Picture 1: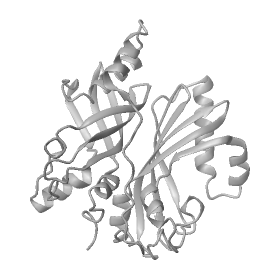
Picture 2: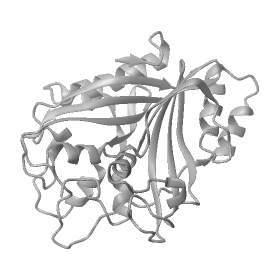
Picture 3: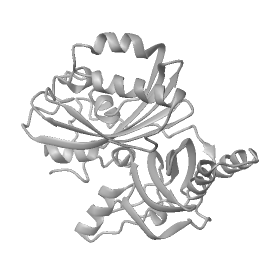
Length: 316
């Protein structure tokens, strides 16, 4: 487990302890008591990790995977890879590892081993979680199961609504600069925020490494099938707004939405003229005021639902 700052103290250390206690108790006999202690009475689960599969299963007679997916994935073990804390927020990047042995939102057991990424961004106030936001790589989950989105009886595709929150990049930067004396973390936040402006020059180190692209599966699909993947050409008016910006040590974590109009070919999908928009999470590392590496994860499955092609990247 890599912490953005292993030497954090005070409220940040306590918030991380709450987040890790909550995560590690899942699937254990202690879980009910831990939840009573660490979840605020008005806890808001703002987004579930399997948002799209759960939405697709609503009002259907699909087998539910159980609390924290434990009926479908009884041997589930979450491997926490990165942790960050900033003010009242904690971020966790982890891998969900398990064997698929039970019904999963309409997908029968496959016996397949699963190993997929999920990211959590939590708010913790007075020792209790008041908000949880989760996003699993549902595209990769279905790919590893060898499955497609189960068909609903009504034939509908339940596409996510367009993101309606977030702050303009320029406003985020102005708010940070107005603090006057800036910490290294403040300066890193400004650079990270500026990277979401299409007119800005991204301040990257000479040995910068992009460990994961946001729309990695679409990028790989385009390369494998000889079709164009050019997000800016497909969504020429694409515009980003920032929801969450956290910094600790030499890391910055950011959650933003990317929105626009589908006006050009995207991996063989012709222009629909539809408005699209999905959340994206990014993790950046810095050295001497420059980005040295980044790991980015977009809701590709949500985008494909909005475009009416959820199974484009999945098994036939």
